Image 1: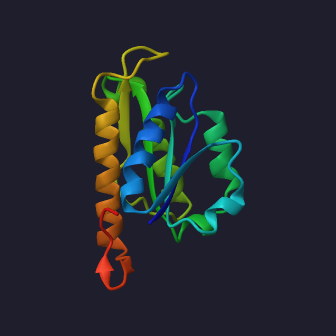
Image 2 (image 1 turned 60 degrees about the vertical axis):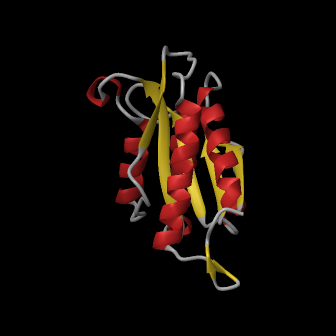
Length: 165
């Protein structure tokens, strides 16, 4: 697995979730994080798994993440296992919106299928902090991503399925 976590973060909460996801994915191969706005398109060349995440602002993704998605050719995303996450207040989604759900919908409209449903990680207030246990939940979600990548796109090394390194 060669995963890239592209994120935007306003108060550091989404960055912490992105780092926890990448750290957990390193057990299955390469994983790194890059903040949207500084993620050059070239970085997708060697990536097989892309995780997009940002805070929910006004029921949608941040402008920087929307710009990243708009400036990334859909054809370069169609070959990747793609998943989305957001950080938001722990209230019903119809009250807060979900940046991850909007990202997943935009990807689907561009012909890019999400590997898994979008996921939300929760903050206690607009500026955070994250609710207790959210970084552990992010790591568990990352392990589920790795399992789904292995199931959907069997990656072998010496004839053995993808497993923790």
